[in-house]
Length: 236
Image 1 (tube, one colour):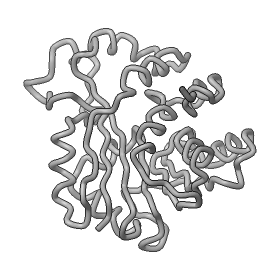
Image 2 (cartoon, rainbow, N blue to C red):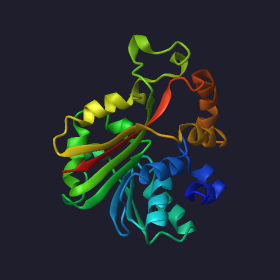
Image 3 (cartoon, rainbow, N blue to C red):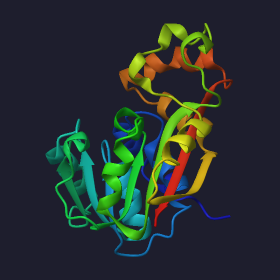
């Protein structure tokens, strides 16, 4: 059995670049559901410290635009330089809620791991992104969520101490219903991802202060509520 890209990639680099459940592992599973051709032009939206971009560039040979609002693109450039792949990935600073500085139809794929729920849990975002993807192209998203909708009075008592209103965790059915309203997309996949447990374990094993804070939350959750939602839609 072949070793996955994630399992063969530098573990310390992964740990130092995580901002949540291991984006490299999540990206590898999400990308496996896409027909990514060498040279495909991909906007990696909310790329964080670039793990998802590294996977798409190194495993698939895609042309990457690594966009994030919180991470300085110079820092990501230096990170890519350290791997000798800075000529393959273009790091940019982008607030997607204010528009995308590219032509319509420019990208083969818009790809987003562990970030879309911050800006896309609304009826406006998907329609605003679709014009930038070629007809026949894809938008692929992986976000943390719940197995069932648990907002307001349904939120379990054990999760309330950790809950923040802007977390935007939703179920697969909630996301499917939201994306079904967009006429120019055909939903190809809306599923629970297999790497939930492993990607969280890898995040909690880091020394990141946010990961340390999450240990008690995950102990309280105990595998009963959280989910990783995969959404893939084709532009038609």
